[in-house]
Image (cartoon, rainbow, N blue to C red):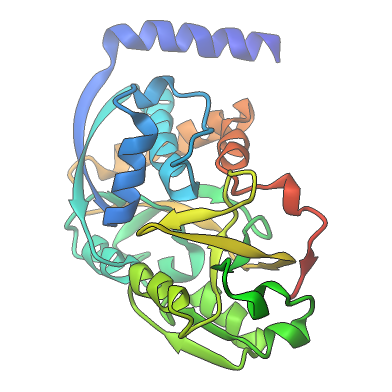
Length: 285
């Protein structure tokens, strides 16, 4: 292991001299872009090793991992040209059309079945059974926060997007009082904030109380309850890009290095996504 880290150190030193600069278009939702900018604070993403930050979350650290993987695997210094996209579903459609080389967030294996003719699929960043989510609500919703069992959850209203297949299937099986379909994340949070819905699913966060904030509204998880989402998550590289194949090969090689170095697990832990605080929480499915 000692020699591996010596190799990595030498790789970074040598590749600084001969690194290839490349600009890549990346599809991204506006809220993710905002958090990414706050997280990096103009720091060089290739040098980030500490993923703890108030704006850190799964989708944010994945943008950093993408750049580091390409650097380690193919000596690419990437300049990302962010293209705003309103929803996850729209991102998938645009990727299929070759509007960008990739998306900012990793993609569920379920969704990649529809895209496999159009993209190269990377090694998994999130492996099977690793994705856990909290049932998030607002602090004034006492009924939701007092839930202690599946039966209690079934008396509540949930909101999600039916095109987010793992989320929707998971919630459907829980049999809440009502399951409301909304396309955009910001509308989901607004519905919970005005209690037209009681909760939504979200990855656990790095803050002490596991909370997240959007549009000045704070969301907290229902204590001691969680769900698991089936499937793996991957980066997808559009075959429409002229350098798609070599980018894909470099990305996979880099993911292997990051995995062996422990940086993928570290990033997910420090962002709160892999969260030891909820280890003993009851899984409802």
